[in-house]
Every structure is written in structure tokens, then in C-alpha cells.
Amino acid sequence: MSGAGGSVEDLAGSKKTSSPWTSWLAKSRSTIATAALVVGCVLWSACAGSQGGGTADLVVRGGKIVTMNEAQPEVEAIAARDGRIVFAGSASEAAAFVGADTRVIELGDALAVPGLIEGHGHFYGIGQTKLQLDLTGAASFADIVDIVAEAASSFGPDAWIVGRGWHQSKWTSVPEGAVDGVPLHDELSAVSPDNPVYLTHASGHAAFVNAKALELAGIDSSTPDPDGGTIVRDANGRATGLLRETAQGLVGRLRSGELEWNEARRVLALAADEVLANGITSFQDAGSSIELVDLLRSMADEDALKVRLWVMVRDSVDAMRENLARVRTIGGGDDYLTVRAIKKSIDGALGSHGAWLLEPYEDLPGSAGLNTVPLDEMEDSAALALEHDYQFCVHAIGDRANRETLDIFERAFEQSPRTGRDLRWRVEHAQHLSPRDIPRFASLGVIASMQGVHCTSDGSWVPDRLGERRAREGAYVWRKLLDSGVVIANGTDAPVEDVSPIASFTSTVTRRLGNGELFYPDQRLTREEALRSYTLDAAFAAFEEDIKGSLEVGKLADITILDRDIMTVDEDQLAETRVLHTIVGGEVRYSAD
Image 1 (tube, rainbow, N blue to C red):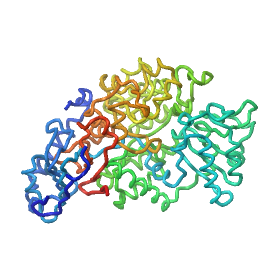
Image 2 (spheres, rainbow, N blue to C red):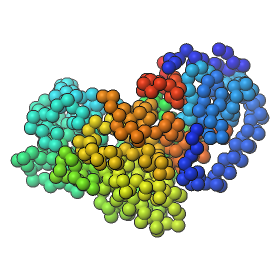
Image 3 (cartoon, helix red, strand yellow):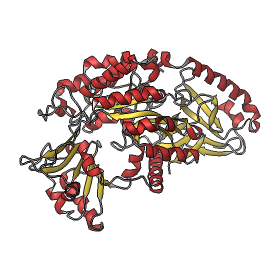
């Protein structure tokens, strides 16, 4: 097809295959900010005809466009200029915005939606995994040994061998002599005698190391467990090689050092490429050090960020106390960087038996998990968040962890002139809840930052950890939370999972496990609710709903184009959806081959 001037891309040959906001969210939006947006939109539209003869930099048209704007749920065309949306409406009216230099994308059977927002992931970690051994496909411990043996054959002596992605609950068999489902390190150490090996669990909440790494860290039978962590041992007290939660730091600190900015930029570039290829225009980063935040701020000043980042600061209380006021950034680099949240982890992960539970684990009855950050430090962090007007974002997976977090939030809100709904503090994951705590999220105005893909990735073994009753009552209870009036931001927790919004969207609306079984399907969301959790509600969770999350005049021209209509296509085809274009600020940052 051809347009009235400009370059035209026809997506018709691509592979074919409204509910309102909750009353909670509607009441929470700022009247002043909303009024300012309306005025801005009117002024922008009025000026459109005088800017470049009324032409746009980009026009997307000729197919279905879901806006997430309840006043105009679907349109035929979007026009963007100078990074903002200047028109949303009919294809015939959009013709006036097409000029000689306008890039035109004809949708055909493709679907355009607001730019997808990753609600919880680890941006730097995504880049790092590109430079490490990928253990996600390992079906057994023997597979891991083979992968490390191959790496050791090409590494020089003393070089670190680093990998990530193993999960003992996904192996086809439990190794003989295993402790807590994980073997002793001997077989691994035999193939890597001269290299320290550090293999991070898929969850990021445990690591498996070899004899060389244990030796370098000085870990022996007399080494005490650190607070909030466990050196897993066999019946004779010998370290197996499994380091749970904070115990990872006993070895991990040997590899840490001052951030080298050139290398870090390379890692960040790898992360950006991966994120854009998955249709993500904004990424909510779940924890970066002050040192990394300083690099990101420098890159934002240089216009070197290609994905919009909203960052939680994760550092010591002393470092935050000294630096929070200095690094606080709202819309830096033309809305490419915001730093306005604090991240702390009150517990670990269910997969590593580190989630903090009210009752012991079903499959490890001697443990109820771990409190990884002392409660007094959590209270200090809450006070810092109030003092510096930061959101407080707490990693809480177990039901005990979630209850303690809500208690901390409630005490902090009592000390603030602002309500919880105004502060928009967040629980990151909120995976396993006591039924009595589910309504507290809504009553306190706490946002649940959850990851749909976790429930289908973990579902096959969750009842083993919790027992069927606890799993049924409180595991990944999306529907219960949403129906009680809670705002949910979706995501993947990458690199724990692939940074694929399609996978998480599919999990959210199907709850289908790999074996075809459904994981408590009464907790599914509708497709509109799931899309909103990846767009408008995710934007709300970051105080950014006035500039992103929906396709409206005046908002940022962030658009994701998919090869099929995920709102109507057959459920079995959802997971096959491909990203065709990722558009950030009206600029195409990724296109499929």
C-alpha cells in the first residue's frame, strides 16, 4: 500500500492468526495532574496544524489500535510528532498528518497497543545473563556439570565460571545423596578444580558453588550461617555447595568490585536490545545501587538510554541516607529516567525455600523460610522513603513476609499526612498471601507488583512447598486482589524468567502449566485486565499514568505492534504472538526481520 507521501510499511502480510478502571484507582488519580494533561492535550492539538504544515513524524494506521483510554477504547490511526501523540482517531482524518517525511506503518491484521511496561525486572541482570552460562535448559545436575566442564576446558586457571538459571524442582530426577533436593558439589568440583564456579539459582535467591569457590571464601565446617542466609550442609556438617539467600554473599563478594562504566554500558546495551525485541518501551527496574544509578543518570543526560527506565534504589541504609536527595530524578533525559523508589527484600524465594512463611514448608518441615533484611532496617528504610518522597517497594513472597510488610507500611502511613493511596507503596511479587491479608492491600492502598508468568512457571511444584490448602487459598491470587480494589502491575522478574510480556500476558489469562493443567483457574484475569496490568496500571504504579500507559493526545508516543490481536485470537495462539515493532517516543527502536 502507499500513503500520501512518506515511507509506508505494510504489515498486512504478517502472520495472522472495556472495562473501566477500578474505583480505587480513579479516586487516587491527581485532579490537578489530570486537568493539566487535558489542557496540554488541547493546546497540543490546537498547535498541530502550525507545526511542519500539520504533518507527523510517524503515523500508524489501517488496523486495530487498542488505546486503553476508556473515552476512546479503539481507534484506526495514531499520529506522533516530537515524541508525543498528536492525533488519535479515524484513518481518513489521519491522512492530514502524512507528509513527505512521515513514516507510515500500515497495520493490516496486526494489533497496536500502548507501549508495554515491564512492571518488575532487573535491567542490568538481563544484560549480565548474556555474558554468562545459560543453565535454564538444564534438565538435571549432570547437564550442569557437562556445561561447566566445557567452559572449564577453555578458561584459564583461576578464572571465574559464572552461570544462572538452574532450578532443582525442574530437574527430571533428584541426584543421589541430595540435601534439600540439591546434590553435593563433588561432581562439579571434579570438572573444575582450578576455577571457582558460581551458579545462581533461577530465582536469584541461592547459588551453587564448587570446592575452589568455597576455599577462596574460607567456608568450612565451622563457618557460621550469616543472618538471613544458610550454608546448606550434609549430615556430617560439610558444606554441600548450596548457599541460600544472604549466604550467597560469602562467595559473591569475592567477585564484586567498583563498577567499570565502559563494561557496564556494554551490559546495559545488551539489556536494552533484549527488552526492545520483546516489545517493552518502559522498564521498572527492581533494584540498582547508587553507583549504577549515577551511571544511568549520566547516560540519560547524554540521551544514551533507548528504553525508558523507572528505577528502585537498592543499597545500604547509610548509602541511601547520604544519596537519596541527590539522585532523585523525575523524567530525566526527556522522560527516559526516573529514580524515585527504594527497594528492600524482606524474604527470599519459594524455589530456594527462602520465602518467609507463617507455617513451615510442606516439603521442608524444619524451616519456615528466612527473613533476609532485619525488621529494624526495613523500618529505617520506610522512614527514609517518607523523608525523601520515594515509593517504598518491598520484595515479599511468603505469607509471613507479606504480613510483616503490610504491618510496616501501616505504621509508616500513620506517621505521614498522606494516605497509602497517595504514596503508592508497592509489594513486589505478593506471591503467597494469608486470606486475612488479601483485603489489607486495598484498605491500605498498596500496589501489588506481580508477575503472571511466575504462577505457570512455578505452579507444578508450589503445592509441594505449601500444601494444597495454602496454595489454593493464597498462591498468586490475582482475581481476589483485583476484585478487592487493588492495582496490579504485571511483569516477568527477568532474568528470573524471560523478559516476555507475551508469556506473562498468556499466563495471566490462562494459568495453564506446561503439562496443560490449569493452576487455580478461578484466579485468571480477562484479557483487558491483563493488558491494563501491562500498560495503564503499570504506569499508575510508577506515578506515570499522565504520560504513558494509554494512547492519547499529549502522551508519549510509545507503541507496541504485535502480529495478531491478542484481545480476540484463540487462546492456543496467544503464546505464538510476535512483536513486529517497538516504538519509543515516536521512533521505531525495534523491528522484526
